[in-house]
Length: 310
Image (cartoon, rainbow, N blue to C red; front, side, top):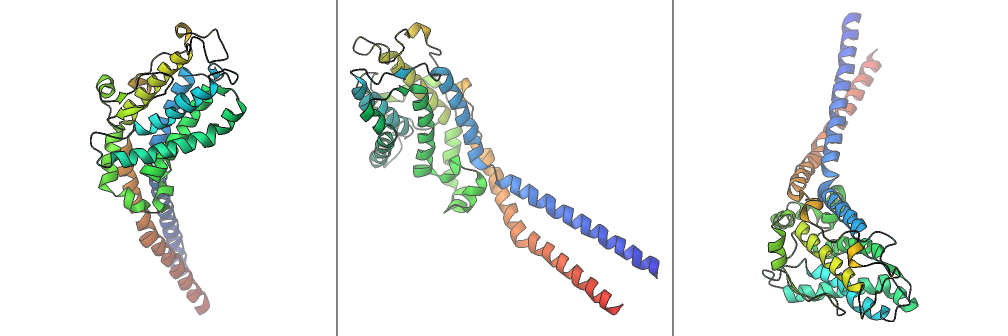
């Protein structure tokens, strides 16, 4: 009889171990699937943009001279419109039925961001490092995505899942189609030909028409546009606006960015993984955890009853 009791006890312990390990693996698997999301791919893409900013306008190289007579004019045109051009160029003017309204919203958001970030600099005529400007434009892009597109585009999947309307967005066909378009890369010259913008000059960059966000193509176009603006700044009104007067177009750290230098994100693949992870996660909450709790509780109660009989 004692052998049977010992055997049963060992068998119960083994069952405890197997079920607990299975539960832990399922929990970890579900958590790992929902945590990254589209935001992780965006982060990789953003990091590649930061790398190019560091190459195009390294910190300490291109500093706009706060004492330059054209300082305020340049800030209120070239720098200010760098934000609006960045945002508006991501809109598809050829297909967006509400392009005019959306453009107006983007421009207002851009102008407000510019004033909040650089207003004090303009007032006090502080030098501005183009590296800092470039990094702020990255933060601006993330803010635009959150404000006008989706919180989930630049945040971890688990945060998106519990964000307002997050689950609807995760399983939205429209969101997936948008991400598919965003990750698509076409010939850069073809993309450039579809963007109608003003020439580089003191009035800054205005966007008239754009194919919108194919994120790699769009950022390559935008970075190359900023390189043109830097060249213009080297000889604005017959002089350089930068503190280092020895800079010229022949000694620029980088004079062109190409698509193969930017990380191509796999948005739809990570979205599909997130969708599967969300399903696993809710199965965990609704089925697995209650089942595990039931097993633990019933086992404890059975053992208590057996102990009482003894």
